[in-house]
Length: 77
Image 1: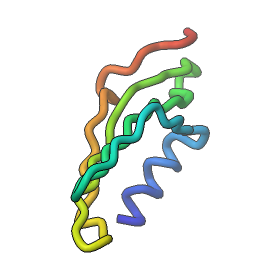
Image 2 (image 1 turned 180 degrees about the vertical axis):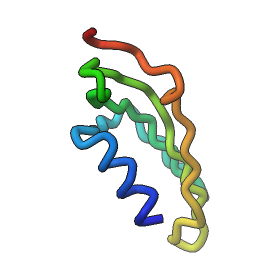
Image 3 (image 1 turned 30 degrees about the vertical axis):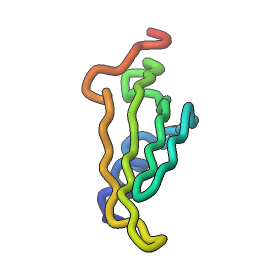
Image 4 (image 1 turned 180 degrees about the horizontal axis):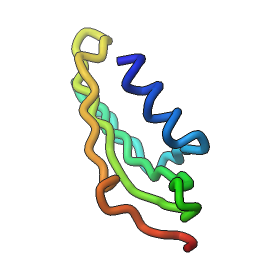
């Protein structure tokens, strides 16, 4: 996992996330976020996503990520 996350940040060195909403209920946490980064061609991109954390006994069981990274919004050419 460390190598995978490391490659993401190596490819997108200015990648930054801002949280939009956080939902918490028994056994589940959902975090809505927006990511922004500069593409290799210089365009500033933005995309939305959510992280879903099923929990049990105070522990995170897994982290599921869903994002629109395949179709980012272009903020600047």
